Length: 403
Image 1 (tube, rainbow, N blue to C red):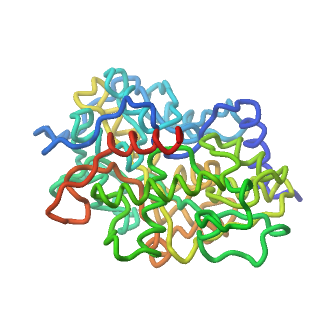
Image 2: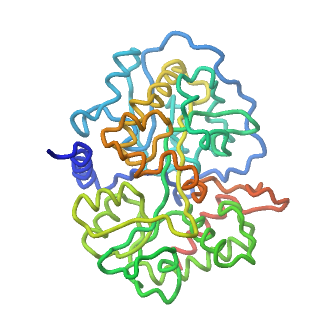
Image 3: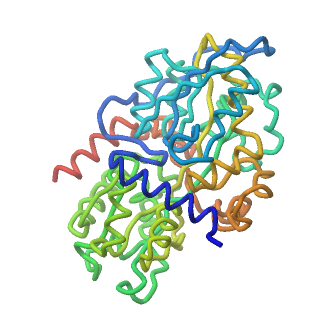
């Protein structure tokens, strides 16, 4: 009998190929419309004190794949049960980058958002989201502890949302052409790489953190502790490494389907990927594997957040409670391809090995993953110096891509 998870993946691949613009992961952008995230303090907003009657609608803005109503694939539906139970009709807007989500939230047209770490901090400091009353969260106690009280979802002890899911940016390689099997990011960075022209890299300013992480391991004299906390000298070194890597890159990607197709047809042999892309490629017969290299990696951790002064705040809280419940977390984690945030979800996945594959509860694994954050002038590593902010990163990335 066909594995139902495998069948869902094939359905998802079909949907992706049909819509080449779809981007299915938490990511940033270099479109230049982003706030730098350098505000000194967030606005003094208050969290909702108690729940009232549901308003009848909730306007959700989310990554594609996080909100499904059965229209993408039959049976993949956690929206309809929510609407029937709460009376809150869901309207959905999707986005492809964190910068796009930040810009759209500024319109005031949405009640709740799934925000990645490189957007959530900007949303907080820009006053676009409210603190979240965790006493009104039905499932917060079941969220993995190492996702709580992080700099991208909590400021000065005040929570701004409920963690959703996480994933690592991995090194994928063609097992037939890349030998010996890599254990390091070196073949994607070093000038003498034998895979020049067949390397792929993530096309985004936040990818500077990947360069910084490699420099942290290979050039300790630079003093990099946190790949998102770079002073001017460290950012210049990362930019230099990225320019060197550009000679190796055959293709930059930010489109889910683009890298999947490139690995599947053999044009790309090695480079940055996500576990879900590896799963899709392997399901399609591509000879690929993915690893977390010795230097560690970057990654994402998403948070459900409620818009400031939402007119549908009760439905927004109801939605956050729904999507953080064990059953829905299991559905989203398998459909999207990530580790769930709710520990109890691991007992409910169709594939009993899903949480093992995605390292959901493997705390040691995540210690080597640096989740995306918005670079700010206040150094995230605690140094009493001025760090570069996100606007600086965008400018540096544009120089790399234009060089």
